[in-house]
Length: 196
Image (cartoon, rainbow, N blue to C red; front, side, top):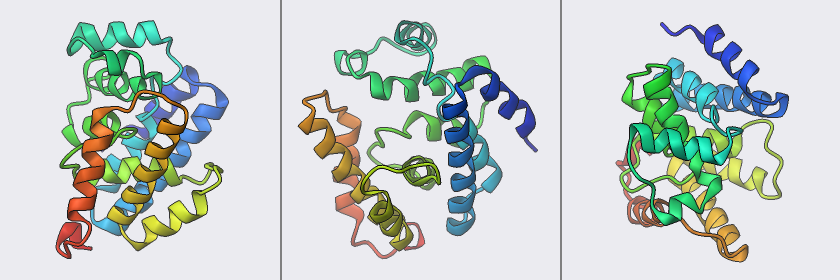
């Protein structure tokens, strides 16, 4: 269905060895989560491969790419370099690589901030990025355990972690992250939520 080798070669030649390894670890975790939660494992694997495709692109180039194909960025987006790559990565996947599958594009687009009304697929890519095998931040084992309990548990833990970190460092908090937090809290006790 997808020419994975083509995309693996692309990121191998585009990203640093560290970022290439991370992308492949996320792809593997995304496939694992997709199989567990009834999503398409091939689409999840490809979204994982490509999720950081523009991560090491200079910020100016990323902004140029987004504004050429999509829209003008807000001051929060321009001043938040840690989330810029999710937007430029989605634009790159759609407009440069010609990927038309909306799950893959939106999985890349929201893998850092999350958003209100996240789809199952978007959550899988977001959580795969947070819990991939190469991750070694202090709370990673707790994060993995929460994700094992359920997608919303993993989302809530990761969002609290992210919001605390952003506030502590006095960085700009993307509104999508706050909307995602509210969405997750609102849905956490619903037993019919994505089969949980």
